[in-house]
Image (tube, rainbow, N blue to C red; front, side, top):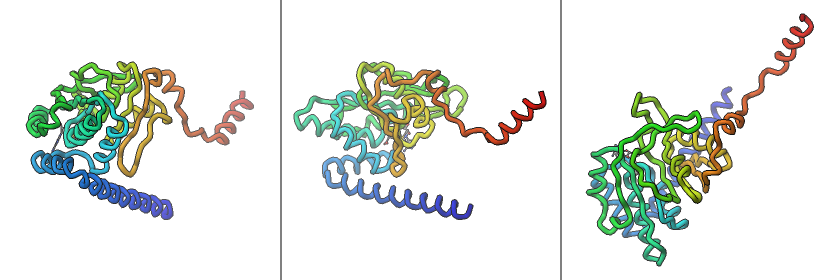
Length: 262
Ligand SMILES: C[S@@+](CC[C@H](N)C(=O)[O-])C[C@H]1O[C@@H](n2cnc3c(N)ncnc32)[C@H](O)[C@@H]1O
C-alpha cells in the first residue's frame, strides 16, 4: 500500500513538473512572435481573463496554423480568441483564404469587455456572440450549450465554456456544443476541450476511445476528426460497457450449491 502511494505521488510530481516545463517553454515560443506577444500582453494586462495556460495557447495557435480552418467555433471568449484570430490572420497573410471565428460568450460583462479589448486588426476574423446557455440531451447524457450559435459548417471547435452546470437546477453536466456541431456538419470536425472532465468523458463515450485522447500534461482533450456517422447511439454506448468481472469462484460455488440443492 505504501509503495503504491509513493508511486502515485511520484507520478503526480513528474506530471506537475512536466506541465510547468511545457508551460514555460510555450511562453518562450510565443514571446518570439513579437507582434502576437505584444497583443497578448496588452490584452492580459487589461482583461484579467482567467484563461488557460500558455501551453494551451501554443497548442491552439499551432493547430490553426497547421490545419488552416475556415470556420472555427470557440465556446468561451478570452485570450484564446486573440491567439486563434492572430493565427487566422497569419494564414491569410500567407495567401490562404480568410478563416473566421464565432466566439460564444454567456456573460454580458465578459462579452462587453471582450468586444472592447479585441484589437482592431483582428476584428475581421472574429465575431463575439452573447448567448444564454440552455440544456440539451444526447443518448442518456444531459448537457448545456449556447442557445444562439450561428449555423455554419465548423471545422474546428475549442470547448472552454459554457459553465458546465445546469441552468435549470445547477447540477453538474457536460458541454454539449461539440455534439451539436457534428450533428449538423456535412464534413469532419476536430475539437480541443480545455480540462472539462465531464465533457471529455461524454465525448469519449459518444465517439469511442479511438477518436478521443487526453493529454494529462496539458490537461487538454483532443477529439477527431469525426463525422456524424461516428456518433454512437444509446444502444452502442450501452453495449460498449465493460464491467469488472464478478468474483467467479464464489459465484460458481453458490450456483453449484443452488443447483445441488434444487
Ligand atoms: C475559462 S473562461 C474562457 C477563457 C478563454 N477560452 C481563454 O482560454 O482565454 C470561461 C468563461 O469564464 C468567464 N471569464 C472570462 N474571464 C474571466 C475572469 N477573469 N474571471 C472570471 N470569469 C471569467 C467568461 O464567461 C468565459 O466564457
